[in-house]
Length: 200
Image (cartoon, rainbow, N blue to C red; front, side, top):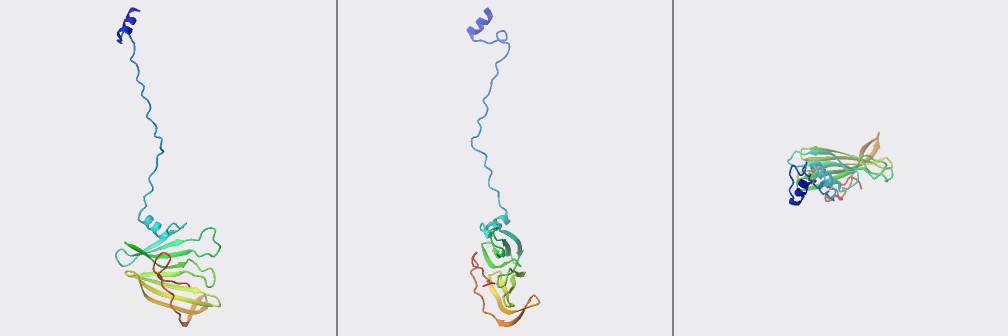
């Protein structure tokens, strides 16, 4: 009794005054009020190129890349399908882009298939050395047809050769029987003006 009172008066805690040390309770760390935000995903080279060429168009994607016989020159084919609300027979667009380190040039466009007479159809394209070759056939009404044969120099983006011919459809092919047709106007190579126009 007297010992406990003395301890309280003197403010001294000893083994005889208190059997255990007082526990120190730490306050929990303050929670971060702001939610964690993940950084945007980093795009690789293909992702950046697709974003540049597709320009936000829904379902647009890169189909393939073909290198030319030159440093830093390639042709990139992209697919631009019609929106789900488009009527049947709407062109599923393909675009053929010349990609260089400092610029992109739209060489030409076509459709994956021809849905009806006088509608744009598919083209065959090849790269030979530094030349981009285009072979295009379009079936028209009244058993008529039309072809375009063209070559583009990729290092300069210049049209090297162009021939547009008319013919008649025979055995599901275009048999050329008409003289050369006037050339279709060329574009600037911008996204809305292909350098080589195949369908008028």
